[in-house]
Figure 1: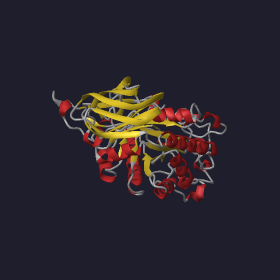
Figure 2: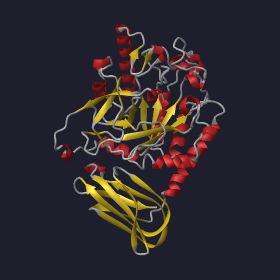
Figure 3: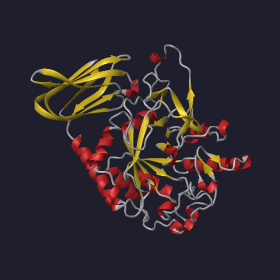
Figure 4: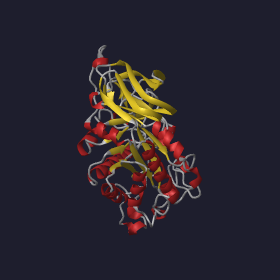
Length: 449
């Protein structure tokens, strides 16, 4: 998506005293629920699906007419069922992308579904999406970026191209009106996505923090306004690969102002904020507009099941959530090939982690799991009790072979989940040894598969 190509941030830093490493920085209740959710889906549907020649940043003086938007078979139930088959427990709808075309009948301007032929201008994709999420037990979210809007002649980080102050005020009124609609008309949201971050008032943006706290105080905010309790951060790429280590704590939270490049992708176990990472990537690789939008004839760009499994290990298995981008075609449906691949991935995920060979947990520094007979070991999954913080700093992992312990890996960050992939070793047990910690280590569970 656009903002990752030119992603610059202002870093809000709080000075920490010399004993800050001992300070208790704990996740909010919303953070705990979000980490447990692990896998999300991100749905894109916009005018370029119907008019693929349109490129919002390159055609500044041209906008597709709302009449091009007519997904006659649109079925959000089908979207959500497809995402759920892949293991997604939450879903985020891109309600307005960079074109400015809005998928709900906004009162802020005329460039929306209300002036399209779809359902004779009486439709509301956001309403349908939220209803489908509730129907199938998937937590709903909305992509609500204010950083770019071609219809309003605005580009990253949320400034009008003309530089005119009156025009900026008018755009800010549109932003506030649209976010108020999205945050008050559709119920509680699980996650709100600010692609490109949030432009603070002193740089020309609206007072986003108070608006968010007023209407959606419990939502998780991807790149949300500085000071919001439930912020999460970007991992620095659109490949679904989190850096390792990727601590949930960080030295700062961020907001887009175009001044300072993002830093600190690994986080900091002694950081002043709980702000974990989310790893987003598209199901279609090297495809139309980064793979985020549908284009005819690109079914061959679908990632393989093995590729998706690797990204799961490198996102969820590195203490971040995995957010998988899913296209919607010009019918208004997730393409058949994509539906099949999502189900294949979900089935593979279930089969790989279906039956634990053994488990353990609790307080302490050394944990062992013994198997009654030699077993082929593929994964060791370690989960920390993050409700008490990230305490583990360094660890070593051993396998038992012929009554001897052999070290096979070492690491640092565990957090919500660390997945150690083992190359088909035959062993009679594992030993997990914590060699450095801040406080008493609390293991929620260790499972072997």
